[in-house]
Length: 271
Image (spheres, rainbow, N blue to C red):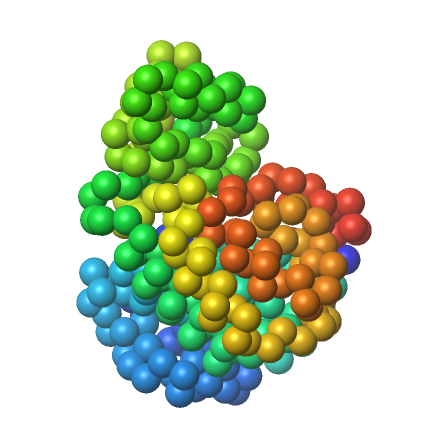
């Protein structure tokens, strides 16, 4: 059984999906729909500049459009249809498109707003993220708990559980710097990430509240694929549960290790 996996921010590149547009009628239809929803999106995807494409509010719809197009092209070419799907953070929206629970139009408009709200939730330069390597999740969590208990402790939270031995932390710039210093002293390696906001942390609460209004205004259909959700690492129980889970996803950690394990438990043998 095949599980379709969709990436999140960081996988963008100028020129993305341009060859798909020319080679696949199905991909062209998806990309034309995205362009109609957000005029100028394809020009930005194909011509840049890269600095503009990298902006969160542009990067998010570009990635949803590109990977929804790739999925459509794969199916058009006779690829075996997946029965399971999951996406990393932003990629969960693409999973909904692949599953038929969201239209491309609704998906790219939602994530454009999602990106804007995330960027506006904290002033530029006040938030940060870092990837912590060579330490177990439990050590990272315990360290963050210790730091939170310090007088004047800064906000820092686990943001992404990407792999055993790779946990991303997110919070205030001062908090992430302090946590990185302590985690290094415990034998870890902390790599600052080039991001514009502290994603998947409590600092994103204003963005989550604003996005909730937009999510409630969109119609989700019952998905044709089983979608394993970031927040719960469990299958989406119903279309009606999607808005609340996608709202919570803005501040909650991406439980990616558990998502992949859950896909395997559901029968996935290829990804």
